[in-house]
Length: 405
Image (cartoon, rainbow, N blue to C red; front, side, top):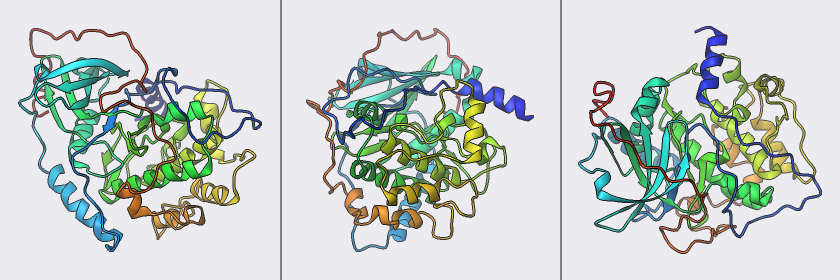
């Protein structure tokens, strides 16, 4: 496909990211926030799922195990699930009480639901068949469902079940009640380094897990990271996640987080997730992204990214600067995460010194921020939306396209 056609297709897939002015350096660093409600709604590619933190018995990871052995065991489980695709369950919307809207997006809506027979709370992602087909997102949607049913890791959202009706497909996931990291970050202005390190370590582990499963995520950003009731992160929205063996060429993601090799249509692999991780570390500590621009023209932003020049604001520690500089390398032969030692170049960096990696996976480390919630069904950390009833067609739409869903 010609470059200009790829760009036009890309523009149709994304929304303008919420932008805020750079915080002045005189503003104090706020390490935590008491509440994150009543913030500006999200305007992103797909609605961020809301996910809870209350999960069945959490699998404990041994401190004595070699971490590569842990990843290999997890990969065996992943491949079994990935190669045994779940059909839609016998459940339906009638089995749940629909309580409120948690978010809206390009292809549907996310609602808080409660299972009638167990009183458990879930997040229900409702996607319009018509919009999926019209925007040519059928393969992305199929990938998202298959990946969500297969992943199992402490810092990733997964799928409980799925079903469909005449007009919509439904993905049921645990409800994570602490809200988006994006909202917390905007409320806090920026995170102190210890808080950024706590979140960053979990995200690094999640990326390492996905890459070991041969998955590339491609949409890392604070909007797609949720905070659970214990203060730990959950990465959500796998619409751009994909199983790869070598390289891919699709132009997709969030503009401020795109790696140079995506912009330049060179073909890319897992290295783009580590670039996004470097952007995330910078944004958590600064309150804005390193290639931030006031221009609404994405080409201005892309030119800055490809040049690779950025500045650190006052207050960045030397170790954090060194880590980010070594991740945000346009030269793939020098980018941390993409070298011989893989994720270990990041995890063993001096900035992460003292991090209890297995303790984090077992959720044994005290979180720097705990969201204030009254219980597992408390959605007060999410914005209020106008409620609209679903309009379900009398005849089944797109039977052939969604036959295997």
